[in-house]
Image (cartoon, rainbow over all chains, first blue to last red; front, side, top):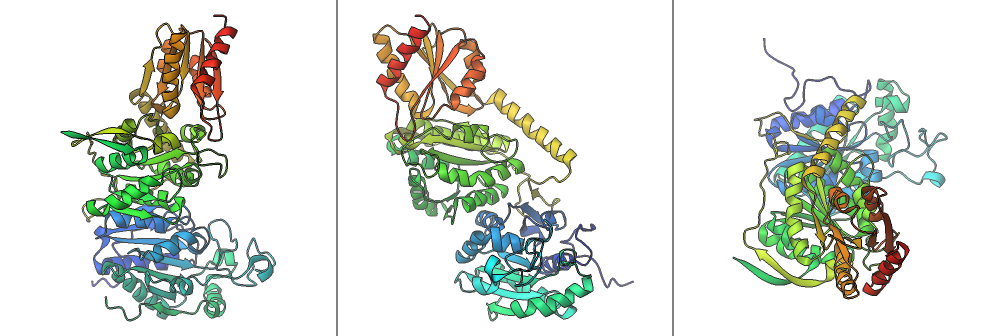
Length: 248
Length: 355
């Protein structure tokens, strides 16, 4: 019988610890499929963050390092400078990358560090129990903005892709989403290109992936997809910010 | 064949690191250690090595984490306030058992303090400045030659035990110039690192560098393994210099640049008929406990001289264990104890102890 569906080799055959309806599983799979398709599992080193995906080193089949909160781009820098020919990626959430790790991501991008960042933006802290993230939308209720995020108390959410695309060292910047099949396929295309940009030695590449957190949003998984579409897309428009025409 | 060169302490550290095979240095400017960065910035490109001026001390230590995890000999250097910032990465590296070398050319504190020399980071270095039960190997050179040699040794120790080694200097030793003998062929150990994330090559199971162990049973086991390692280091890696301790009226203890001052005090005191000994710990962890125990009942008293409010003196008291009184004399804020001050202190103590 012909095999029509199997797990990518770069992903271990394990059940994941993520909550039902969480899109991290989908994103892990996309990254693993790209690693398989590019044939780079044996030369790839990933960096796990602090947050819900702190232990995704258990799921990916390539070599992995676990980094302190927000420091993944610095750790990846150290790895990449030792092995410039290898592929190095970080996998980070919005608290990790856009709050405590803002300096590390900005300067890795500014240096044009030849690494790839998978940035998962679900507008909330998942692991610690649904607190406000730098990407939490205005008015959004979280455990630390129980009356909704207000400009006066909390300021404005950060558009990471737009911000990083102003840096010369960041050569590929794209925002995608995983709320439906069409967008999932497009996300995979962007992830693949980001890895290819690194492999060609062109500079820093990042894919921001809009994602859901049904548990902390307090929504059914299906409603979460709708919430993302209706609330996150207007604030975080999808598309390529930089490097669309790069030859890879 | 070797060569003799007049070198600044900070440069000797950098040269030692390069000769130990360090090709990855990550730093951030701070006085009084920045010459290490200058030296690395100049030399690394020619050696096909990496010098990065990081965006912060935090980033620099995390770059060391990544490079060390990839199996390279990696290093960072800083001075007190910068070392405080590195504590997060230091604790993570201890947890992940990553080898590496950190240089602290200590300046006076607390806070931004001053840029003059101090020894007030002893507790931070020896007792663990970051979170969790961990130890660093702490080396305290007192000459420029020793800075050079101990930096090479620091990399060997780090790789042997998968541990962070800290060179604890101060503004005097980092900035002073002395002749250094450089050997063409330094004793550099090459240690296999099968645990490093080098890329699996699809020929082995994937390697993981991590410091997180969510299950308490597993984490306790990991901690016991770390403690066993520290115990082995205490058994095998103690370095100490004892001087004039047999029949001493009083034994002084000092490390780093203060030990140099004490050596002069010993000569001055001898002229006045006072026999002064010196125990100079070269490793602050592991602390030379046996050496103190050996001489604990020889002198009338002990005196720890430090550029601090009294930090190493606590370890001296633990070792002497009540057999003799252990006194302390120190200066702070970048002030350096003078020979006369120390000698007067010795006389006062001996008068009190009934010489």
